[in-house]
Length: 438
Image 1: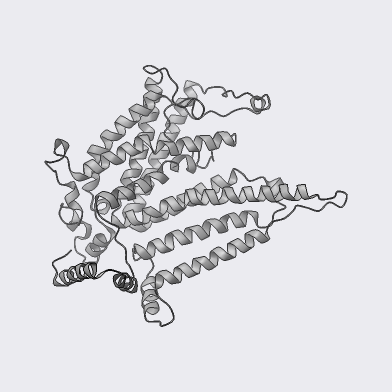
Image 2: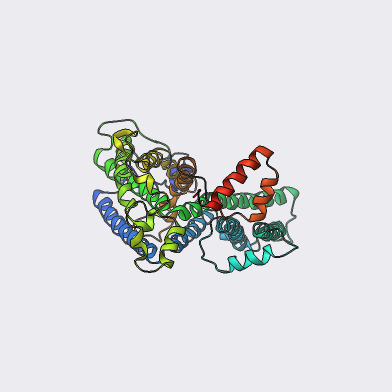
């Protein structure tokens, strides 16, 4: 989400561009700002309420569906920026190829992620694993999926190259080598923009599969930090902008943003991160991992209520106060504070990159599908990097990612260890079998 420390980003008129000058369009009136603020606030609460209800009912599956839907909307908005129907009509499968690249990347990202962090959404995976492990012709399920999406990638490459055209042939005009080169150059630029968009939209959110598997708090709570920073920065910028610091924050990218909004939004985000994480931790659906929730539900009875008291889930120790930390805070509060600092200082640069993109294409909003907002890209531009930061924080300060690794790969990796490491591994396995290790 773009951290809006002032009013919406300004756009530039065609006359200013033609004269070689860049001047902001007329500033919205207070009434227009108030109307937009009200619409934006109401729509935001409706979207948040609907999303939380969906997650409460369908749990992890709902969260991943929301993420996939948002990726589709953002990809659509970004590739549309460079779409010129008058030129693209001469390129066969132009739109189709864009979505082929996107679907191929999504399959590569989520198929391997679901294999490594299984959530039982697709029962056929279990039968697939069993059949492959019993086969003498295949290695394991990871390799089969690698092979499948490599074939898909190869098909996309071939179809993409075959779609290159020099344009419509005009009998009255000779097509020169320079014209052909320019045409191919244009198509390659479009392809580069598509692949860049795929990398931005798809690859960064692959981490959210693993963090969702570890607990929804690692996905939803960091996202709420971005929302807090966005909202607080907007109101602080509107209330105190240019009253204490006269210097512009980003005069070329975001002329309306102010230091007061940036700093005020950061302070509010840090306070929210430190104190609100305990509330999120009191919700079993957010705090506990997918495996723990699934086990509690399969056992019947009280279900999630059995996980409510701290100590029922593996990582509940993170929420216990630690006298060795500042103010007797818990480890989770310190991690949340670090993520809040990231959400206030680094994540907003995703929004600044989005502002630069809008200026490059001379648009005010990416789309108008969400009333009062500048499109899904404006709502997600900071969330992508925030998802990666949360995964890094989890694997660095909590525990390594829990993956369902094929037994064959474990045995193969063990064979490559030296004798000392194999002995350590043997003792660890023996301890697991005896129930000493968890």
